[in-house]
Image (cartoon, rainbow over all chains, first blue to last red; front, side, top):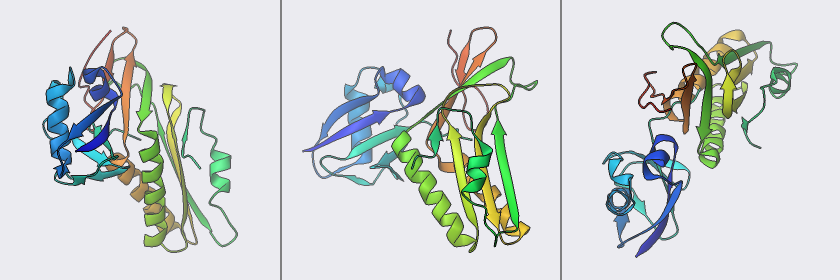
Length: 82
Length: 144
């Protein structure tokens, strides 16, 4: 299993009612697997998009990127800096 | 160092990070919290960030820009927290030997910020409502 920390921000944090969650997914796993697990198991997170922007360990990645045990996976609403 | 600050942006200290005797042109971009006709009574915008990634992303943007325009020095501050209308949310400074590179580097960075910086903003309105803002500038949710 890969145990990862999932971070939620802005509107996604409001939907999930939390800023983070610990999630376990069978290895080998991708970011999409983590998103699927989050939407299924975290109350409120079912309202998150099926294919959100995501980052692993501070870098934006595609949803087919692999995740490893201990990774930090962030689910990012459309960015609006500036 | 962090590029994020909860305090008002001080341009002089930012300029000091990039200016030098060999750089004759400096370009400054400031983004300011706005309440125009299309905003509908915005009083403040609250900026939140994925702080660690935002700092890392800004480091990467600045490095990439200085590699793309050799001789250019760039710096950026992005404010976080609630910012009233009329105050700056972001400042970018670019200094170069000549003005063309300073303008191009400065423009490049603000476009990269818009495209990839993990930050979000929530509008606070005079009628007490709030709304997350999507990249197209349209509110996406409302609440008390």
